[in-house]
Amino acid sequence: MVWISNLRLKLAASRMREGKLLAYPTEAVWGLGCDPLNQQAVTDLLALKGRASTKGLILIAADFSQIEPFLDIDTQQMKGKLLASWPGPVTWIVPSARNTPAWLRGKRDTLAVRVTAHPIASALCRAFGGAIVSTSANPSGARPACTQLKARCYFQGIPLHFLPGSVGGLDRPTAIFDARSGVKLR
Image (cartoon, rainbow, N blue to C red; front, side, top):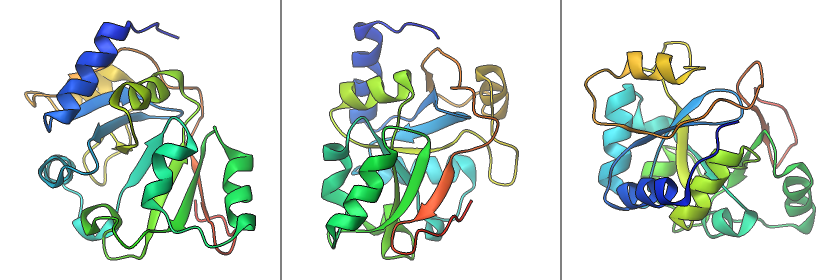
């Protein structure tokens, strides 16, 4: 695993606060991220991928407190289920808080969230001071980039800031579960 300096992380977080897009390693694939509360940054990210805004996005965080404001968790049982799987490579579809922006939810009343165990992605969330949008670094319909080189090839000439590192070793994207039913969706 590549060590990243605090200065590099602070610079990346600062760029996200300015509305810039980032590429970074996650548990299984390279991710693209931005400030989830910056609608223009999210719009730019969706345009870069060619992804429909109706699909919704995933937020990752370094700890539960970073994603909790986006969620409407109605039972201790649901919260316990989430916390028991994190930090780790498990994404949950959770009812969203009323004030969660539509540009994150898409056409749903839920939000996909994960407390990541990947050291670089987690450190980025800490440096940013909150949850970040995290979607696979690939054009929609293409295979997710598993290396920085592949992510760079997909987005040649695009002003992306890349954090160094490698993916966490999973052989496929993280599992996704519905928090209400417990059903595995991916």
